[in-house]
Length: 412
Ligand code: GLA
Image 1 (cartoon, rainbow, N blue to C red):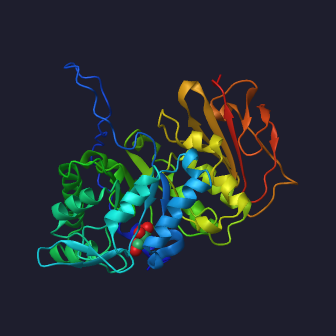
Image 2: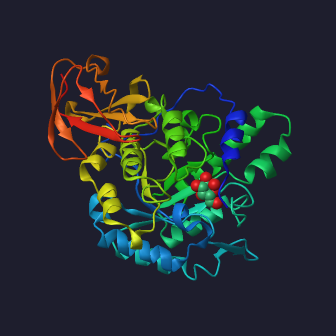
Image 3: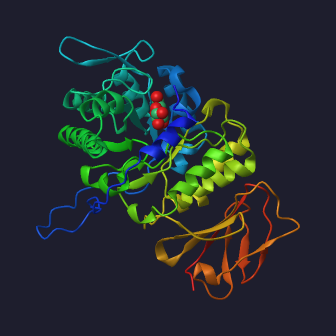
């Protein structure tokens, strides 16, 4: 079951953003006691694959093994895709001691985790704070510690924790007319699982999925969240993808090593997205320092889709170790200009034609000054691979929904 468009509207209507101070997640700091600095989880945005966008409720053990095989065979692993994440519908029933078992589609989770690990990859799983997941399978309410230990015993490396039924079954029931109390209950539930994961003793990436309610970017890092969804569910169409890009503008200051805004998983190669849209989607996720979790059918991936997902220059933008997310510098009509500061003084510049029209008769002109740059800028066009020099007032033509993505060296 996917959440419908009505959820996004509900999210907008429901969001009551509280103003609480952001507490940055722990980053490795040299300690005076000369102890080795603690390894931070997700120092760059996690990369991998997730079963939901293509398989949804049909996913099986075999599909997950197939995805792991393909990540290696297609070169995606070499490009940085490491996590193989099982989304909803793996769950079975709890036994008399409360231990959760898998359902028939996943006969042996430990064996599956071992298989994925044997490929040099990592494995992720899915649950939620309510009694049921979004697809109405068993979730973790009142079994948080037990579930975290179970995941650790299987060798799980990543947990996506999805709000779903917690909203109706706990928030709405316990605090029917009190939104602030509902949000407090929600934050406490995420805190509980964050602590349970930590207590499991295994480093597990903690991915919050509660559709951006109550500004998780302000509180998720403090409770161990490595990433948090900023919006409702992505769909494989331009309206949805651009809507998400737009909703992420302004959140850059909350992202950094170990704690990332999550505009949702990739739809590259899904639905009827054009090549330009696939390129723009992938490029903008890189500009947003987003987790890059492919969501397509890897065994049947077309070469042009593989070329997009494995473009190492674009991935390098996403994975830049400075960890500073890009921002929208300005818009000229329906063309947007985004910049992202990169390590070593470099910068990524994205020019995105959001509109339905081709600008062939009305090229827009680049204002380097509005990007804070002065004089011609030498760089590389990351989709053609060619060297380019950007100049003040340079005309740019872009097809509808296409993008120009340029990396310039130390910016002047
Ligand atoms: C929600 C999440 C999706 C997916 C489904 C699974 O809709 O936002 O990403 O995990 O649940 O049921």
